[in-house]
Length: 323
Image (cartoon, rainbow, N blue to C red; front, side, top):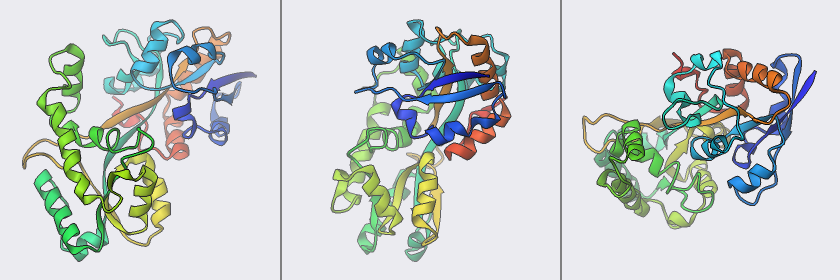
C-alpha cells in the first residue's frame, strides 16, 4: 500500500479537512491519503514552492495553479482519458490559456445567487424579483415596512465572501459582462475592466448599501448571515457552499427560497456565476507518479463525484457539466 500525502492549500483547508480526507476510504485499496496543510503567511508562490513535498496538491482555480504549472511544479495530465468525463468549461480553470495543456482533475464547483425569507415576502405581498427594478422595489417595500432589514450584506472580513468580491461583484456582475463571453474578452484584450459593463456592477452594489441596516457594510459576512438566520433580515447574497449552514441555522423557523441575480432589463438573458472551484493535481516531482495517476483516475469518476458532494456540502461536482 502506498501513502500519498495531499497538500491542502489554506483556502481549501476548511473544505477538505482531516476527517473528510479519511472518508476517501473508497479510493483504490492500494492507496491511502495523508493531509498536509502548509503554514503560510499568504497564498503566494514563493512559500508554496518551498513546501511542495507532497504527491498530490489540491489546486485552486486559474492563475495561482497556472503559475505553479508554468514553473514546472505540477504534472501535465493532458493525456489522461478521465478528462473526457468533463465538459470543456469544467476544465478551463486548470488549463493553459490556449487550452492545450491540462494540469489537474476537476473536483467541485459552486454557484451564487440570492436567498430570501419567504414568510417576509408573503407578509408584504412581494413577488420574487426578476429585474433590478423589481429588486429595488422589493427592498423599498421592506425598508418602508421596517420589520426586517431588507438586505443582509457583509462588507468587511474575508474577501472571498465580502460584498465586493465573490457574492457581490461576481454574483450580480455576469448579467452585465455576459458571463463567459466577458471573461474571454478580458483575456483577449477586446474588453477592459474600465469598460461600462465592468463598472456598472460596482454602482449596483453601492445602490444596495442603504438597504443593509444600521451596521450597513461595516458588518462581516458572518454577522450578515446571522442577521438573516435570526429572521431579522429578509434577503441574503448567498454562495451554495453556505446552504448547509443556513439550513442548520434557520432550523425551520421560517421558509426560505432562492432567486437568480436580477437582470438589468426585462427580457435580458440571465447569467449566473458557476465557479469551478477545486481540483486535484500531481506534484511533478512525486516519486509515486503511477499511484498518483491511479488516484486521479478515481477523482474523475462518478463514484468520487457523489462522495465529494456528500462530504463537502458543495453545490455540485463538475459532473453536471459532463458531456
